[in-house]
Amino acid sequence: MAYSLKIHDPRFDKYLKNTKDYRFQFGFALAIIAIVAFYIYGEVSDEMDNPEALYIGLGIGGMFFIIGIYAALSIKKEATWDGEVVEKEIIEKEKSIDFVVYVEDQKHQKHEIRSENDATLYNYYKIGEKVRYHGKLKSYEKFDKSNDAIIFCNACAFMHEIDEHICRNCGCPLLK
Image (cartoon, rainbow, N blue to C red; front, side, top):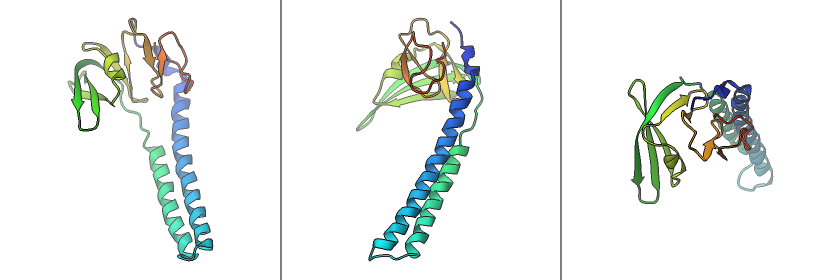
């Protein structure tokens, strides 16, 4: 029973850097696709000619490029804090069910762990359990994992059997 020191493993920093890079690259790729597609449309269409179609493609492509930059820069580290699971709630909606776990930090602020139509996280946390919020990963780690059959990757949230040590999805160590 303890919080894992594996949180300082360099694979987490690599995962965060790759996530940032992928967000930028995805926005850049969408920008190029939009520009090329509108240019081709302007060449083959009877409705719109170039350079008008190209200008529209440049505008939309620029928008995707800016979104990619914003998405990459939006990955910010938050403070790490300790808390306790204080409440659980099931909220039934018209077409879905929200499973909510409330965690209270040392400043008595409540934070939500929310999942829609999936009770796995809801069942994973028990009222009274101590948890640590890892700000750089925006994820929670339980203090006592000794009675658990599963564990979640703190980087990508992939679910694993408790006896696994490395995430099969992202390659980061499992915090146990």
